[in-house]
Amino acid sequence: MWRPPHPDAFLFGRERELRVIKERLDSVSDGGGALLIRGEAGVGKTALLEAAKLRAASRAMTMLVATGVPSETNLPFAGLYELLRAGGAQL
Ligand SMILES: Nc1ncnc2c1ncn2[C@@H]1O[C@H](COP(=O)(O)OP(=O)(O)OP(=O)(O)O)[C@@H](O)[C@H]1O
Ligand SMILES: [Mg+2]
Image (cartoon, rainbow, N blue to C red; front, side, top):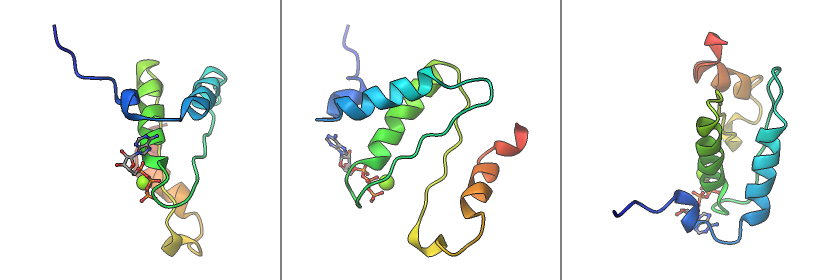
């Protein structure tokens, strides 16, 4: 039976990053954890984030995501606001 390819099948050359994501998820404790993905524009941050989301979901982990944008650099707590707006209030 045909199955759609796993999204990772389209990620070339990211074995190290995927390993880091796995290790990070492995080491998350009851208190939670954080993962920062940063890089130049278009380098593949969102693709890695999607890979992290898939892995977190398969472990039934709650994952909150905030994306930094240059226009919010001087906005205090912009990242925290985004996390809470994304569902952190239920925590
Ligand atoms: N490792 C990879 N192998 C193949 N394609 C990739 C890889 N990483 C990203 N891509 C593709 O490259 C394009 C840009 O990736 P992505 O959107 O993840 O970059 P980004 O860093 O989030 O960009 P931006 O800075 O604009 O937010 C997308 O079409 C994505 O599917
Ligand atoms: Mg992106």
